[in-house]
Image (tube, rainbow, N blue to C red):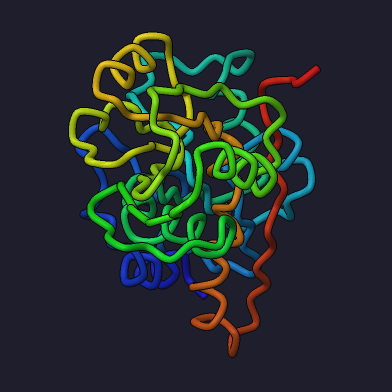
Length: 245
Protein backbone atom coordinates (compact mmCIF):
# COMPACT_ATOMS: atom_id res chain seq x y z
CA UNK A 1 0.00 0.00 0.00
CA UNK A 2 1.26 3.45 -0.86
CA UNK A 3 2.16 5.87 1.92
CA UNK A 4 -0.44 8.32 0.62
CA UNK A 5 -3.17 5.68 0.91
CA UNK A 6 -2.20 4.90 4.50
CA UNK A 7 -2.21 8.61 5.31
CA UNK A 8 -5.76 8.88 3.91
CA UNK A 9 -6.95 6.03 6.15
CA UNK A 10 -5.35 7.65 9.19
CA UNK A 11 -6.94 10.98 8.29
CA UNK A 12 -10.36 9.29 8.18
CA UNK A 13 -9.76 7.68 11.58
CA UNK A 14 -8.44 10.83 13.25
CA UNK A 15 -8.53 13.95 11.02
CA UNK A 16 -5.20 15.75 10.96
CA UNK A 17 -7.01 19.08 10.75
CA UNK A 18 -7.95 18.61 14.43
CA UNK A 19 -4.34 19.07 15.54
CA UNK A 20 -3.41 22.15 17.54
CA UNK A 21 -1.77 25.08 15.73
CA UNK A 22 1.56 24.43 17.49
CA UNK A 23 1.54 20.73 16.61
CA UNK A 24 3.27 19.04 13.66
CA UNK A 25 1.29 15.89 12.94
CA UNK A 26 1.10 14.31 9.47
CA UNK A 27 3.72 12.98 7.07
CA UNK A 28 7.07 14.17 8.42
CA UNK A 29 9.38 11.95 6.37
CA UNK A 30 8.57 10.12 3.14
CA UNK A 31 6.99 10.13 -0.30
CA UNK A 32 3.25 9.54 -0.76
CA UNK A 33 4.08 7.33 -3.77
CA UNK A 34 6.32 5.02 -1.71
CA UNK A 35 5.10 1.43 -1.37
CA UNK A 36 4.92 0.29 2.27
CA UNK A 37 5.07 -3.35 3.41
CA UNK A 38 5.45 -2.95 7.17
CA UNK A 39 4.14 -0.45 9.69
CA UNK A 40 5.56 0.07 13.19
CA UNK A 41 3.47 1.87 15.84
CA UNK A 42 5.43 3.64 18.57
CA UNK A 43 5.19 6.51 21.02
CA UNK A 44 8.50 7.94 19.75
CA UNK A 45 11.09 7.42 17.03
CA UNK A 46 14.06 6.02 18.93
CA UNK A 47 17.48 4.90 17.72
CA UNK A 48 16.91 1.45 19.23
CA UNK A 49 13.72 1.11 17.19
CA UNK A 50 15.45 2.20 13.99
CA UNK A 51 18.02 -0.56 14.46
CA UNK A 52 15.20 -3.15 14.32
CA UNK A 53 12.95 -1.62 11.67
CA UNK A 54 13.21 -3.12 8.20
CA UNK A 55 14.26 -0.86 5.35
CA UNK A 56 11.43 0.81 3.47
CA UNK A 57 9.00 0.59 6.40
CA UNK A 58 6.68 3.19 7.90
CA UNK A 59 6.77 4.30 11.53
CA UNK A 60 3.66 5.92 12.96
CA UNK A 61 4.35 7.78 16.19
CA UNK A 62 2.35 9.78 18.68
CA UNK A 63 5.01 12.41 19.33
CA UNK A 64 6.32 14.26 16.24
CA UNK A 65 10.05 13.97 15.74
CA UNK A 66 10.09 17.56 14.45
CA UNK A 67 8.19 20.38 16.15
CA UNK A 68 10.13 23.40 14.89
CA UNK A 69 12.04 24.07 11.64
CA UNK A 70 15.65 22.91 11.80
CA UNK A 71 18.22 25.67 11.29
CA UNK A 72 20.96 23.10 10.76
CA UNK A 73 21.39 19.36 10.37
CA UNK A 74 24.29 18.03 12.43
CA UNK A 75 24.30 14.25 12.57
CA UNK A 76 25.77 14.11 16.06
CA UNK A 77 22.77 16.02 17.46
CA UNK A 78 19.16 15.08 18.13
CA UNK A 79 16.93 14.92 16.08
CA UNK A 80 19.31 15.09 13.09
CA UNK A 81 20.92 11.80 14.13
CA UNK A 82 17.50 10.14 13.94
CA UNK A 83 16.75 11.70 10.56
CA UNK A 84 20.06 10.50 9.13
CA UNK A 85 19.30 6.91 10.15
CA UNK A 86 15.77 7.11 8.76
CA UNK A 87 16.90 8.46 5.40
CA UNK A 88 19.65 5.85 5.07
CA UNK A 89 17.12 3.07 5.72
CA UNK A 90 14.39 4.69 3.61
CA UNK A 91 12.04 4.89 6.60
CA UNK A 92 8.85 6.96 6.34
CA UNK A 93 7.31 8.73 9.33
CA UNK A 94 3.78 9.84 10.13
CA UNK A 95 2.91 11.40 13.50
CA UNK A 96 -0.56 11.51 15.08
CA UNK A 97 -0.35 13.72 18.13
CA UNK A 98 -3.01 16.17 19.32
CA UNK A 99 -5.51 15.00 16.71
CA UNK A 100 -5.33 11.43 18.09
CA UNK A 101 -5.51 12.71 21.68
CA UNK A 102 -8.80 14.37 20.82
CA UNK A 103 -10.35 11.41 19.00
CA UNK A 104 -8.97 8.23 20.59
CA UNK A 105 -6.12 8.12 23.10
CA UNK A 106 -7.78 9.71 26.13
CA UNK A 107 -10.87 7.58 25.68
CA UNK A 108 -8.80 4.43 25.18
CA UNK A 109 -6.84 4.96 28.40
CA UNK A 110 -10.02 5.67 30.35
CA UNK A 111 -12.07 2.76 28.93
CA UNK A 112 -9.54 0.03 28.22
CA UNK A 113 -6.80 0.72 30.78
CA UNK A 114 -8.53 2.31 33.79
CA UNK A 115 -11.84 0.56 33.17
CA UNK A 116 -14.18 3.55 33.47
CA UNK A 117 -16.96 4.77 31.17
CA UNK A 118 -16.88 8.41 30.15
CA UNK A 119 -19.69 10.76 31.17
CA UNK A 120 -18.49 13.45 28.74
CA UNK A 121 -15.65 14.01 26.27
CA UNK A 122 -14.70 17.40 24.91
CA UNK A 123 -11.50 18.39 23.15
CA UNK A 124 -8.64 16.77 25.12
CA UNK A 125 -10.57 16.19 28.32
CA UNK A 126 -12.59 13.09 29.15
CA UNK A 127 -14.70 13.14 32.31
CA UNK A 128 -16.02 10.20 34.31
CA UNK A 129 -17.65 9.38 37.65
CA UNK A 130 -15.50 7.10 39.81
CA UNK A 131 -17.73 7.57 42.88
CA UNK A 132 -14.94 6.47 45.19
CA UNK A 133 -12.73 7.87 47.87
CA UNK A 134 -9.62 9.75 46.77
CA UNK A 135 -7.43 7.06 48.36
CA UNK A 136 -9.22 4.31 46.42
CA UNK A 137 -8.79 6.24 43.17
CA UNK A 138 -5.07 6.74 43.86
CA UNK A 139 -4.65 3.02 44.47
CA UNK A 140 -6.51 2.02 41.31
CA UNK A 141 -4.74 4.50 39.02
CA UNK A 142 -1.33 3.63 40.46
CA UNK A 143 -1.91 -0.07 39.82
CA UNK A 144 -3.46 0.22 36.36
CA UNK A 145 -0.78 2.57 35.01
CA UNK A 146 2.06 0.87 36.88
CA UNK A 147 3.11 4.09 38.58
CA UNK A 148 5.94 3.84 41.10
CA UNK A 149 5.30 6.77 43.42
CA UNK A 150 3.03 9.36 41.80
CA UNK A 151 2.88 12.94 43.00
CA UNK A 152 -0.45 13.72 44.61
CA UNK A 153 -2.19 17.04 45.19
CA UNK A 154 -4.73 16.76 48.00
CA UNK A 155 -6.98 19.79 48.02
CA UNK A 156 -9.32 18.36 50.62
CA UNK A 157 -11.75 16.38 48.46
CA UNK A 158 -12.15 13.04 50.24
CA UNK A 159 -14.80 11.66 47.89
CA UNK A 160 -14.34 11.85 44.12
CA UNK A 161 -17.66 11.95 42.32
CA UNK A 162 -16.44 13.60 39.13
CA UNK A 163 -12.95 13.24 37.67
CA UNK A 164 -11.23 14.47 34.50
CA UNK A 165 -8.46 12.74 32.54
CA UNK A 166 -5.97 14.29 30.11
CA UNK A 167 -3.11 12.04 29.03
CA UNK A 168 0.34 13.57 28.55
CA UNK A 169 0.56 17.11 29.91
CA UNK A 170 -2.80 18.69 30.72
CA UNK A 171 -2.40 20.86 33.82
CA UNK A 172 -2.95 24.01 31.72
CA UNK A 173 -6.63 23.01 31.57
CA UNK A 174 -7.05 23.42 35.36
CA UNK A 175 -9.01 26.72 35.14
CA UNK A 176 -11.53 25.02 32.82
CA UNK A 177 -12.08 21.93 34.97
CA UNK A 178 -15.26 21.44 36.95
CA UNK A 179 -14.28 18.18 38.63
CA UNK A 180 -13.16 16.98 42.02
CA UNK A 181 -9.93 15.60 40.58
CA UNK A 182 -7.66 15.76 37.52
CA UNK A 183 -5.52 12.90 36.25
CA UNK A 184 -2.67 14.12 34.04
CA UNK A 185 1.10 14.10 33.67
CA UNK A 186 3.96 16.60 34.00
CA UNK A 187 2.41 18.32 37.02
CA UNK A 188 4.64 21.19 38.10
CA UNK A 189 4.94 23.00 41.43
CA UNK A 190 2.82 25.96 40.34
CA UNK A 191 0.23 23.62 38.82
CA UNK A 192 -0.15 22.10 42.27
CA UNK A 193 -0.58 25.57 43.79
CA UNK A 194 -3.27 26.44 41.23
CA UNK A 195 -5.07 23.15 41.89
CA UNK A 196 -4.99 23.84 45.64
CA UNK A 197 -6.49 27.29 45.12
CA UNK A 198 -9.26 25.83 42.95
CA UNK A 199 -10.00 22.96 45.34
CA UNK A 200 -9.10 20.30 42.76
CA UNK A 201 -7.24 17.13 43.70
CA UNK A 202 -4.61 15.86 41.25
CA UNK A 203 -2.78 12.61 40.52
CA UNK A 204 0.32 12.83 38.32
CA UNK A 205 -0.10 9.87 35.98
CA UNK A 206 3.11 10.59 34.08
CA UNK A 207 3.60 11.70 30.50
CA UNK A 208 5.13 8.45 29.28
CA UNK A 209 3.02 6.25 31.56
CA UNK A 210 -0.27 7.71 30.32
CA UNK A 211 0.63 7.84 26.61
CA UNK A 212 2.56 4.61 26.16
CA UNK A 213 -0.68 2.94 25.04
CA UNK A 214 -0.66 4.86 21.74
CA UNK A 215 0.43 1.83 19.69
CA UNK A 216 -2.28 -0.48 20.95
CA UNK A 217 -4.90 2.27 20.78
CA UNK A 218 -4.12 2.98 17.11
CA UNK A 219 -3.85 -0.72 16.29
CA UNK A 220 -7.36 -1.27 17.70
CA UNK A 221 -8.81 1.06 15.05
CA UNK A 222 -6.44 0.65 12.10
CA UNK A 223 -6.11 -3.13 12.22
CA UNK A 224 -9.51 -3.80 10.68
CA UNK A 225 -8.85 -1.38 7.83
CA UNK A 226 -5.71 -3.27 6.76
CA UNK A 227 -6.59 -6.90 7.53
CA UNK A 228 -7.15 -7.90 3.89
CA UNK A 229 -3.86 -6.40 2.74
CA UNK A 230 -0.38 -7.89 2.61
CA UNK A 231 0.75 -5.37 5.22
CA UNK A 232 2.21 -6.19 8.63
CA UNK A 233 1.49 -3.86 11.55
CA UNK A 234 3.83 -4.15 14.55
CA UNK A 235 3.41 -2.47 17.94
CA UNK A 236 6.88 -1.41 19.08
CA UNK A 237 7.76 -0.92 22.74
CA UNK A 238 8.88 2.57 23.73
CA UNK A 239 11.12 3.39 26.66
CA UNK A 240 10.78 6.02 29.35
CA UNK A 241 13.63 8.56 28.99
CA UNK A 242 13.53 9.07 32.76
CA UNK A 243 15.25 6.31 34.70
CA UNK A 244 13.35 5.27 37.84
CA UNK A 245 15.67 4.11 40.63
